Amino acid sequence: TFSPPGVTGRTMKGYAIVLPDLGALESLKKSWTLPAAPEIANIHILVAQVPSAEGQHEQALLTSASALVAGLVPTLDAKKSAAVYITLGHVGRVPSSLHFEKASGWKEIPEYRTMRATLPFLIELPQIQKEFTMTPLQHGRIFALDLGTSKDQKTEVVFARGVSHVPMGLDTLQSTVLDDLLNSFDIIERF
Image 1 (cartoon, helix red, strand yellow):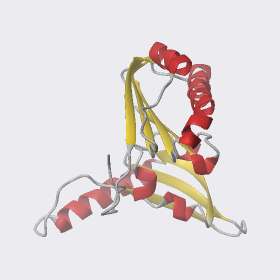
Image 2 (image 1 turned 135 degrees about the vertical axis):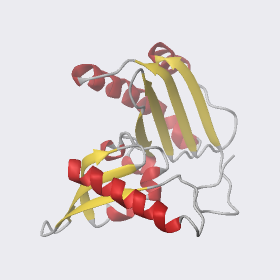
Image 3 (image 1 turned 90 degrees about the vertical axis):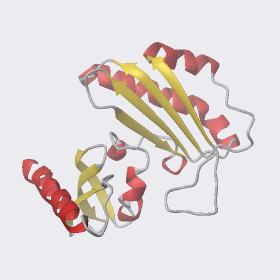
Image 4 (image 1 turned 30 degrees about the horizontal axis):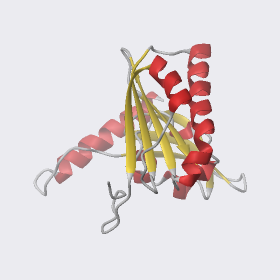
């Protein structure tokens, strides 16, 4: 049971499953069952040991994850689910996150790839996408750098957004924000 970020007084049911490796993900496709709860808003699948993937192997991994979610669509709709997040714990590399939402027809949202499940909401990507077509330039777990093209194709804007998990008080606000801004500009300049 959880509350969406920034929302008080509303709780939702979520479901998480932790798998040891890709073999378990393949087995899950054949024997998937969800709890008896009438509604499950979000489902998180964490695959702990995934070999680092490049090129064709990465595409095969994405195809496998997409096939899993596609096979679950009737169940997801029956449970009134809104999203499935698959986190792949790559050996020797930063984990990647795959986002599948009902609003996107249960297709993977590539522009959210590598972002933690809450980041698109926190950096207001869904609102920006109402006015701009977003092309990912660089994404991390807590930041996104995107090229936005207006719907009328007349304007291009670089959107740089991120979140900070550093605790701060009034005594450290200025220095923390300054450090975060400097780090953000470093990321933009490197691109």
